[in-house]
Every structure is written in C-alpha cells, then in structure tokens.
Length: 67
Image (cartoon, rainbow, N blue to C red):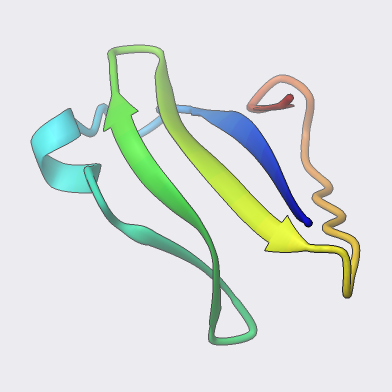
C-alpha cells in the first residue's frame, strides 16, 4: 500500500512554477517527492512511498508545512 501526502515550503527565492514544476526532491540521492508548482509564497509538491519505511521530515515551521 502506498502512502501519499502533500507538502509546501516557503518560497524564499521567489521561484516560479516554470522553474520548479516536475523537479524531484532527493534524499541521499533517492527521489522521495515531486515538486508540482509555485506561487509567490510557497513551493508545492507531493510524495508517495510504500510501507517499507517511514518518511520523517524536519524543518522550521515558518518555512515548511506537511499534510
């Protein structure tokens, strides 16, 4: 069974959707998420993984939101 979730990260570099859309999010060289779009405030994406491991993401709550 795959688990799915969404995330948003504060867009501190004013990136645009055209610059980030489809970009992989890597952890130790392995893709763990995909960036979908950006607006002036946040960069958005989703992640999906199986039950073989847990995803733990730590970050400053002023810059990161996970659902």
